[in-house]
Image (cartoon, rainbow, N blue to C red):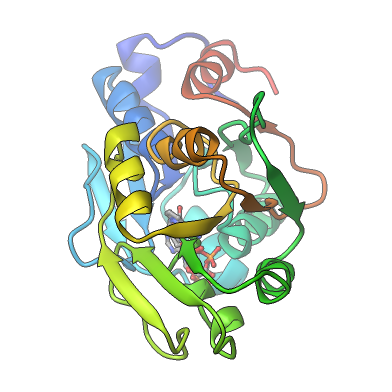
Length: 259
Ligand code: NAP
């Protein structure tokens, strides 16, 4: 049980593991470290030059739910915070299982999904393969693909479209045969997104519903250009897990010991 409030003595007794790789996880690490909480942030190690949170950081997989459970026990973790990306479904499932098996308190935080606004022309699909099928059925023209480097295989058989692919790290094959690659990690601006879309004559945007402000300028740009968007819905949260929407709510839960 979390000690009441964030008093220095009580906070120092609590060990928190944050599963990270997001802006929210870094914000949370800073806020908790500032309050004297013993925080370790965990990164998968996918990105070569990651933005590092303050406080202790460990990098690399745990070895499945079992490995994460062992880590929770061996490190005497009191609270596990799943602040991973909405599409990082495997680690979230492992977090739920490991927390359950070790009786560790779990708090999951997920930023809200994006919502279509007036003037948007979105088609929501459930999976990346569904998105690829939608694109294949479209007339020729350039597709802006921002779904991440590990989701390119679904488009690799498409000989008909040009793909403008934007990723943080260079992708590994299979990739679309007619691909122009842009390496960038944002945050992005409306002007920048408009310039990119116009200069490459983009006809459709394919994106995952990551949510948040850092990468949402592409949606405003698509709206301004009257461009259709294929939006891949988020995977479901693990069974039995409910998520809060922001870091402030996580702090409130930790402070009052609720949930
Ligand atoms: P994933 O598919 O859910 O997880 C695959 C495996 O990577 C997990 O089983 C785990 O390995 C390891 N892993 C993932 N996140 C970890 C973490 N924070 N700390 C330690 N190990 C972790 O994850 P993903 O989609 O590849 O995402 C990897 C990381 O990138 C996450 O931390 C996520 O927050 C961040 N990220 C993902 C996306 C995205 O679109 N998926 C976007 C931005 C940032 P073991 O089973 O060995 O423990």
